[in-house]
Structures are given as C-alpha cells and as structure tokens.
Amino acid sequence: MLFFSFFKTLLNHSLTIELKNDLILTGTLKSVDQYLNIKLDDISVADELKYPHLSSVKNVFIRGSVVRYVYLPTGEVDRGLLEDASRR
Image (cartoon, rainbow, N blue to C red; front, side):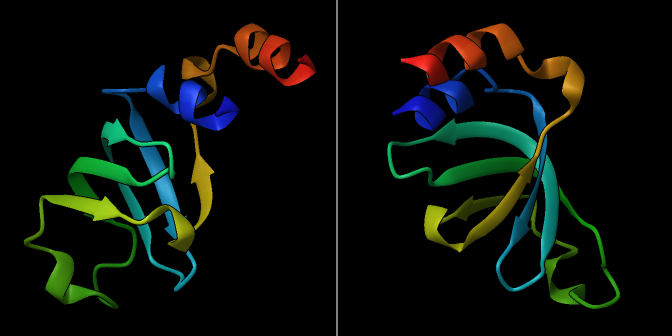
C-alpha cells in the first residue's frame, strides 16, 4: 500500500516508465490502482523508430507486472512523506 499511496500523490504529473520489454514511455499519470496498474495520457515513446506503431497512440493502460522502472522528476517527489511512510 505504500507505493500505491505514493503514486496517488503524483496524479497529473509527468512520469517516465520503462517496461520489461525495453519500451520507454513518458506521459501524464492519470490513474493508478492497488496492483500498480498505471494509466498514462499524452504519451510519447523514447525510440519511435523502433516502435513506429505507437506514434499515433495517445493514452495507455500498463499492467503493473510489466513495469521495470518508474522514473520520477525529483522536484515532484515529497521525500519527507515517503521516508515517514517507509519507517512504519
């Protein structure tokens, strides 16, 4: 529940997500659920030449089990809240 609560604080912020198949997507976080499934709007693909079929896609739903990394802009992370929650 720690990460679910943390991601809820990042709604409507920009995130970069790397999937286990090496696809990197950047977009605006619109929703997240308890399984860490993520919905992104206004996405862009890091390597459009490798994935040309995704150039026309504007929003995606990503299953939490296929996420390798989530890159967060440092200015949008409330470190105090995250540190307090992880101590419990």
